[in-house]
Length: 268
Image (cartoon, rainbow, N blue to C red):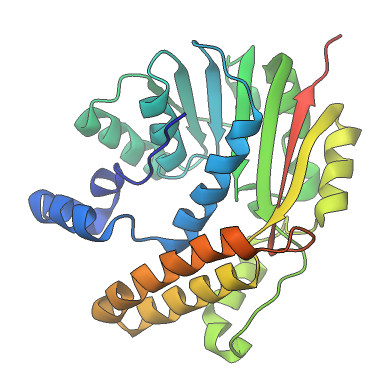
């Protein structure tokens, strides 16, 4: 499967929407500009190789945000339907606008909690860096299990409860304040996430760490570069992306700032 990423950013970014032609040129020159999302996608691209898709699959992007993953899969799998669900109405509206402008016909949006939809018999559900924003007791593992068809797969990628940093933490105080308020569900290490999957009835088919110390360096450089201004952001962008790819080569498999598990709904 040939996945590309970030082409819809020119339609979902409020800054880029002001100058569409200039934004397309900018995108062609610099590529996707959110280093965190770029790093997540490099992992996602590898993870879905673990899953066998049928020609006409029903897929759910749970907590789609601005729909980057949904658009990527929809473009790569034109005979499948990709559902993009989020409880944030503004983001769903932005995704709808991007669907119209990009003319991708096989993305369906949902502004609702999963349990309130009619979705069923899904082949694949994934949630990338979403569950850390949800209290553990409210994470919809059970609902996903019910919505999947037997043999269907569920992928969750979240930050590890333990994080390794490089630069002094005082450089990131604003970000840490945001994390304390937002990451109410950042409570699992890899074994804990596996145990949660198994307790909900899933069979584990993959479990791993990602985002090692080199990837962390990439994120920190990009964060500081963005805070310093647009020019510095653009200067650090290719360096950060290069470091991410180095991390994917040299990362030690027994640790990382992110964890991911794929579970399969067992046949009755």
